[in-house]
Each structure stands twice: as C-alpha cells, then as structure tokens.
Image 1 (cartoon, helix red, strand yellow):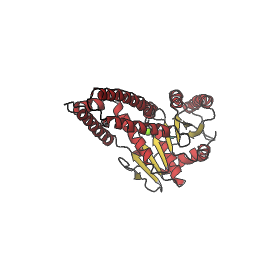
Image 2 (cartoon, helix red, strand yellow):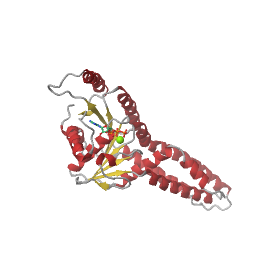
Image 3 (cartoon, rainbow, N blue to C red):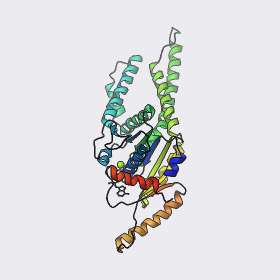
Image 4 (spheres, helix red, strand yellow):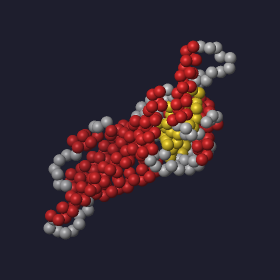
Length: 322
Ligand SMILES: Nc1ncnc2c1ncn2[C@@H]1O[C@H](COP(=O)(O)OP(=O)(O)OP(=O)(O)O)[C@@H](O)[C@H]1O
Ligand SMILES: [Mg+2]
C-alpha cells in the first residue's frame, strides 16, 4: 500500500469493496487513519446501507461527519439513507409537478412519485447521489469509502454510465417533442422547456461524476479478499467489470491469513486451514500478479477501536511482503 500510495500522490478518493465479511470496513478504517496521521484531513465514509463505522469506532457517527475521538484530521460519517431517500423523493416530486404543470396534465404527482421511488434500485441511486455530492463538495484532502458488498458497489459506480444513457434518450425525445410543438404552434416564439434544462444539467453532473470516477490519478478501488474460494471468485469477476467501466483498480488486499508462530503446537485443524490458505494464496498470486497491495494476518481477535486500527494500518502500510 505504501508503494502504491507514494506512486499516487494525488490520490483523493479511495474505495474498498469485496464479498460480505472479508474486511472492507476495517481496511477502510485503517487506511483513513493512516492518511489522517500523514496530516491529510480525511473523511471515512460508508455507502453500505448496513453501516458499521459506529461500531468499528465505538462512537456514533451516523448522519453527519463526526470527528473521531483522539485522532486529529479524521472524521467519520455513516450516510443517512432515510434522509437521502426523502430528499430525493421531494426532488422527484418537484420535477414531476413541474412537468405536469408544464404539459397541462391535470394529475397529482404522488402516484408517479410512489412508482418511481418504490423500486429497490432507488436506495442505491440515492446513495450514489450522496456519494458524488460528497466528492464534488471537495472539502477534505482524502475520502475513504467503505462500500457495500461488491455487487452493489459496482452498480453504484456504474450508475453514472446508465444515467447518461437514460438522460440522452430522454433528451432526444424531448427535442423531438418540442420541435413538434413548435411546428404545431401558431406563435413562432420559442418556449423555455424546464424539463430540458433539468435533463441537461443532470447530464452534465453525471458526466462530471464519470470523469471524476475514472480519473486514475485521483481514484482507486481496492478489492479485499480472504484466501478462500468464494471471495476470490467474486473479485475476479468484479475486477473485470470495473476495468470495463474504466474505474481505476488500485489492487487486491488479502486479509485473514493464518500465521503459525515458532514453537506453536501442531493442531491438525489449524494445519489444515493453513494448507488450504496456502493453495489459495498461489491462486491469488497468479491471478492478481503485481497488484497485491497487502497480505494481512488474521489477528488474535476482531479489529475494533482506534488502537487496533492503528496496528492494522502499520501492517498494511509498513509491512507489505509483496
Ligand atoms: N485480519 C483480521 N483479523 C481479525 N479479525 C478481523 C480481521 N479483518 C477483519 N476482522 C474482523 O472480521 C469481521 C468482518 O470485518 P469487516 O466488518 O471489516 O468486514 P466487511 O467486509 O466490512 O463486512 P460487511 O460485508 O458485513 O460490511 C469484523 O468483526 C472484523 O473485526
Ligand atoms: Mg462492512
């Protein structure tokens, strides 16, 4: 990690993804702590609807950026999805009302709002909006995102492309509709189209988001895995998707490697686990050659609180074996 970060001095947005339970939250926490200690004002934030930063840090960081006790330069923030969803709903209601009035359709917006916001992707898109808002606000030197298990993260990040396609289609049909309207109208005066203005500004926003998310100097997405079959399979697949989207992949962090200390008693169960992990390590080394940014041992207990995170950070940044 240290080599990677020194080769990427302008890095500003760092993401951690991977299968459920592999250590995304602890890696994000340790990385944010490390950057804060380098003197960078850092925001550790979670886009996982199932938050765990408050429990990681043993303090309530829900709903607003909150200074982490005892650490200078570090703030943590669990995005409040309920609030975001409410805000997005209101925005959509406003737009629909506006449109209905504009098009002289005597219907209430509420039914449309319900159908637009009841689908399961809505929470994700609200989360995405919130994430890019944070990125655009540009108030911190460093942003570390603890993302949801990778399927969601990929959708979250790929959303900008989907949005652009959708908005372009909408724009095209708006253009056709308004030229038809002009043709049919007696007065040749060109009317202002508020929906068109909105779509244009939305497209610009998405385009800026895409530019930012594909900027290899500023962004890096790290995959966390265990030396086990399923988490490896997951990141192999998702890594390709990220590459396709043009989202810069920072590399792979292998977590939970069991280490045998000198003089330790031979226990068959542990020996078997170690042998299994060694096999998977070979696979990892072959598949992710040159992009392994850290190999982290399984600690004697779980990783919670600043002290433990500090220990993890020093393994991650100062002790890399690859
Ligand atoms: N190297 C390690 N040694 C010991 N415990 C670890 C290690 N890495 C992670 N843990 C523990 O494993 C559990 C899962 O880690 P974490 O919460 O970071 O995973 P996650 O990928 O964020 O999970 P989720 O998908 O649920 O968000 C936590 O209890 C954490 O403290
Ligand atoms: Mg987590």
